[in-house]
Image (cartoon, rainbow over all chains, first blue to last red; front, side, top):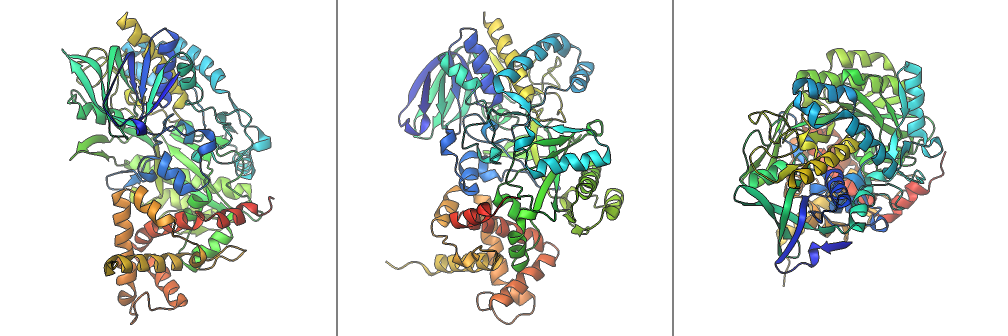
Length: 499
Length: 129
């Protein structure tokens, strides 16, 4: 195995491999693992640093500064600027996500195939299922142990049960979790089976090289064929990685289209069809301390309204983020901080219909996106259900996080009013975006898609896209396992084509 | 070599503002004014994207430089006592657009406050239910 830290690469360097992978998140790691398993040599180029379990800091500021893109302040522009979170480290967001694992929903797959039947042949359901079975084993995916769930998760179960909503412990990729509540800062004990220590580790055991702290700036073309990648290492050197067989882009639904555009490969709808899961959250105060920062970071979910486009999750914030979400400033904020052990927060993720776009403007990445009225309606509906669950679970009051509506409620009565006549503008809601898709969508029509159903770029030979950019739509559920399954198929297709 | 006056004033303003944002939580938690932020600011300057630094500087300028006058106070924010500063922040929070202006300051304040290991230890050390 080999790790090359770009911070130490001070002069130009040339590397070569059968397959060059850009990005080391779930997609890139899965491609590297599958390609090395099939005997290919692989170089993975990753913009962020390699952070080991023992190096994850307690300080939320240090964590967000070093592990998240733009300190976690990346924002979509539109009528309602909404932050979107992306990890920027070896493993992508996997080391700092909530460890939530969902298999690809069959209903979403069927939507894709109904819209483009060629996808059914290129992505056999049985293959996706078989890959998912194996990946889940490797990642240690299992339901959250109630012994480490903590109050925030157990109370959600109580609230959902009282309302008759289907709910369950979240299936997570952890082994030996002790409920430290630090998934989103990186597990300091290494319990999370993130892709850097699992899939990428497997690839490195089979000889893959990982170049970290080096930003891929350009896909290099030769005679209309992808021949490699040019990356700029943080140490100042330019690294040219030649690909003998394939270049696979796996940088995320934001970074992959940006790399294509910067490489002059703006053919087709590159950057268009940006989709995501915007989410809203609600804070609730309980009489007994709930200590939201303890217990499995995200250990329980409510799935009974997934058919409406809503999924609910217990959230696990660090103290800093919880405090910033509490109401008030000055002496009001002081009192809230002193009382924060009694507050917890749950979220509602929306399978939104809105579509945005990723562009490069004056060299900077710009994402434009605006939730539709239907999506904002789901914000309101989600908040109503969250509030009703909280009161059913015993909350004394809830803080809505909605501007232009009552800041706090002490009974569920007004929640129906919120759903019916709450603010119609997305700007009124405290929202955040996770899970992004669709900006290099796959399909058989090159006018409406960027890659073919076999992940190949429509116009450039030996160029593949493996991440959630290729998903025709959002999933409505947490995508990391689906991304791994799809990327594994991508690696198989790329190597089959090369041979 | 003398330090330029303007950066000094900016540093003073942002510290006064952050002190007012979390005055005295109680429960064994220190006031923001008692949190040593000397190690925080250089890291913030180095790590925060320009838009965040710009937003924070602009919010500081508006809140410390103008807010008291706009609310009818005859003294600057810096010259107000703790109760006066608290009153200004809470009144701005209720104005249209005020909460958005304060949010960036609140986030920076929380970053700085919980960056202190004493604060982390005090909160985390409290007995579990």
